[in-house]
Length: 617
Image (tube, rainbow, N blue to C red):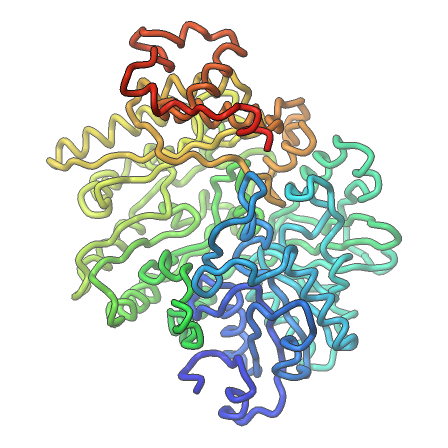
């Protein structure tokens, strides 16, 4: 029985009286019917338009059998690797296989292939060469041009070439998929769909590209010159705006990848229409015997209030995928979802999050964006807030108040992260008071990422003084409210532009601040981010200047160890790091020293394995 879930079997089709699907969606994730998961979201959007859609999740790619389970679709096949790039789903920063895949039943690993989009498409082409094939999702979106693949340490060509897909949807795909579906249903051949914004496709020539376009360095030229990779990223990045952006073209072998400008953001009515669809908000019952799908735990009692991010951190590709223009849902739509959550038999009274990529961005950063687009020559917050920035939390505070007074709600938390420089820029509301009084669960997670001015500028993050100011105001507010609540800072090690001296500077800051990080994130160069372009090329694409990049395993291990200098296992690494950058003054019994003399208590905890065996295995 389908029980209101999407169609995943022939029995489901029979129950609905369907002989044939209009669209088949193949996904690398298990089926969780929640708007945070891309496959069910797109399927629900198509279903609401009257199309018959079937979903095949995590098929066995070693044969074609699973792919044929729902039969040949009438209009097209959609393919996505899932909510994450399939390589990131499977491998750590150390390129080791992860012990759990949160998007698979029971957290099982090996339920999806490496580069799942390519593998699935190749299998589907074996079966049905004549059915339109459309790829999308984060993996396809961020690999649409020549891109650096960290796990193979190489440049790879556009995923369009390797999948032989007819169309690639990049960014959030609701508008594109509806337009494509309607064109296919109306009889338009997919090879003639060259007008849909938010898509990319292959062409043999540029004869019918009538609009002005930006030509990137070719794939073959980039392979011979790392500087061209940085240049290509920068040129592409500048056009990622739905209003002022131009078509972008790149030659690869004898073909051209043609990318139309981004799709226009959803307005309030449109985005409400997506999130108001009848999601079941849980995994499909077929996974019950395997323990369900772990990824639901993070989002089951959370609410997406908006999309987009104008923070533009260098290490993040959200602004490239979702855009810099905020797309917010109405209060009515969000409150309806909150009431649906309250009705869940497992709800304990706690809304875990109300936010988006950055929780406190609920409106466009300035008034002109929906008329003229985002600025091409500057960011909204970095290196300092733009004079045109509209820093105002009034709408967000009003929304939070409405949710927390709903019958059945005990507490509403904010977990998706806040930009503290945006909080400091807003002197019109009492956001910090409301945050500390109602929306913190003892600890507030924030992400300064670093403290070195040069590194922060490269990252696109606010300066250290902003962080220190926020710490003081946060502590002052909690003291005023009589609350004992703490900050949990997140830092990134080995980010491009961060050398050993910068890492020592951060370690000293951590020592003096008293906010010791339990976890440190090693930088992972994922496709589509500015920092990945820096990692591969050694060049800042925004300035053209050369950067230091920690690529050696030993260099990266030293930077990570410095951030966790209290861990006795890191003693040898930290000593080597301090000696290498001539900071032996931080070794000894002094109050400011990072490495203290061994005591009887700590001697047995010191990491004793051979350093080379540990670092170069």
